[in-house]
Length: 285
Image 1: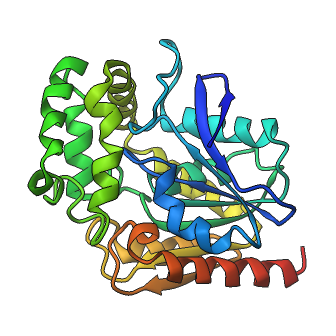
Image 2: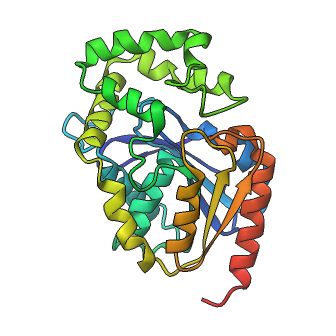
């Protein structure tokens, strides 16, 4: 694991290195880079995989007290990371809230380093915050950090983590990962402060992804939409709509998975991404 000092604070990231085409993989709320461990293990020999832990609640280093932690600012932080690492022709891959960050990036003007995008069962359109899980979590953001911390202590218990208002509808097989992701917010006051700031910013701009969707047709690069076919948090219809409005996109469905496809079906997701990358390399620019 590497560290880099960005404008908001210190960010941890994994970088498999090598000369292969770069993939930058983004996670969601209350998650860290380990969401992608299984996928990276499959792809690292062929691609350079860069996986940051964004300040979305499972990060280890508190951000600056004045740092902007809205999702547009998180997207700018990712763009800053691409610049600092001098990554070019990057394929951005995002799951859950990470997919929202990818949409904000490719819908914006700072896409010179981006050559493709993969959206994996993610927030989109008016499903923001997404489903019962996201709405419950964002609602807790109105609490002061201390009370938010008292609420979040319940997540120590597996039966609570498996509830639909927590991670129960997000993953079928990933409870060990979700337990690990909760440790920073459970034990670090400054991480709870950061998390509350993120949640409040989401609550303040629920039209964010509706507005971004209007600009997605401008992204004229290869794109792939991968969706859990029976996702209970992210509607499959939203996956279809994303594939329709992105000019060079297609939709692939994944069976036997909840929202967190990188946890539930890492080998299958890696196969899909590899096939997309190979086809994109053959396609005319």
